[in-house]
Length: 413
Ligand code: GDP
Image 1 (spheres, rainbow, N blue to C red):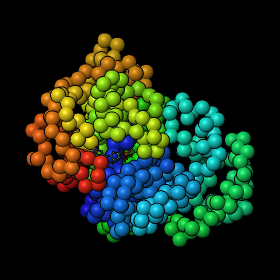
Image 2 (cartoon, protein in one colour):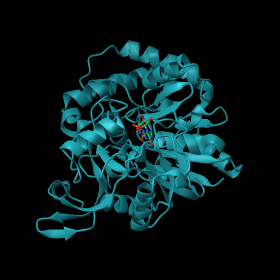
Image 3 (cartoon, rainbow, N blue to C red):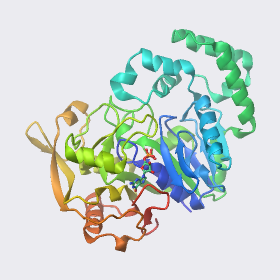
Image 4 (cartoon, protein in one colour):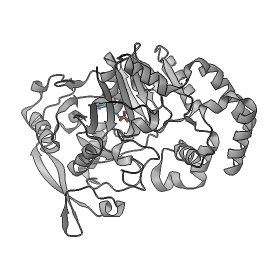
């Protein structure tokens, strides 16, 4: 099995968790390399709905080890809560390994995110991720490896908390962190070496991207972006491993959603937006916030393909489009009287982009749970083929419902 990357092609929430989980049926390792507990990957299977924020989605399979690379902002309290929830669902304990170079998200990071207004301004998930990455770049962050020495851990905590003017109980934070260290002591270390050895040993590996390409710190709709590298390039950045990827799967819904602030050219503030939100259950897995909704945007999707070099697409939530007379897809923008087919760098330009739509026939039939492409209504098949032609890569997975089994695999899928 070649190494596979699964990358969000939109503004996150593309249902990557389900695609990763599906691909990991035959993988031995699933690696997170970016983001933190601001991710909300959902897997619905026979044991219930698992909402994963830090645990790699593939690690729900007994034979698949989950690795948290150093690019992940690691919230120890969040991870422990998540593991407890999985245990309460009666799931086997995930086999996890943590990079000792991963930066810790600490209580003062969450506090700072509220205090400095970024939570409201950007519409972040309020998990302290941005401030934790800020501390990392400012070279004052604390990492998993810093948990080894209690005295320097306390000093580090005091210093960083003082810089944030955080008044919380540092002793309690330190005690929690030491307990965390003890719990994970045997599963913490050099993740780069672990991943490299697994690749050399021929293990099947899936790299699970969090958030989406349009939220990438540099390549997304800056400044309305997340604070990590969300594209395929984040794999080297967040693991230190030079991987030769066999497949890069771009995950896109059959329409578009966005959470929080920032430009979204095909957003529909009327009945279609509402219909997609209700039909798709578009409420955030991490925050419960309602997502902004609109038609699929090919300008953005081609841009994401250009950035990541997708070998294929996973088109999720196709079932949500059932029952519509016609389905529209954005194929260009009009910005200040000019027709534009490239995704602009300036959020300001995008905010003024008026989308140009191609309209395709819709289909009446419900397709929930269909697992065979030829069983889809003809118009739904045409819609998928048309997207393949427009983007120039095959659609190898199609999502036909929330459940882990509601997926059509085509070709290698
Ligand atoms: P992620 O962060 O990219 O993994 O996406 P989320 O987990 O936030 O969103 C995926 C949500 O959509 C979950 O509740 C899934 O159960 C659900 N879902 C996944 N695939 C499909 C699909 O094909 N159709 C429908 N209707 N729901 C889906």
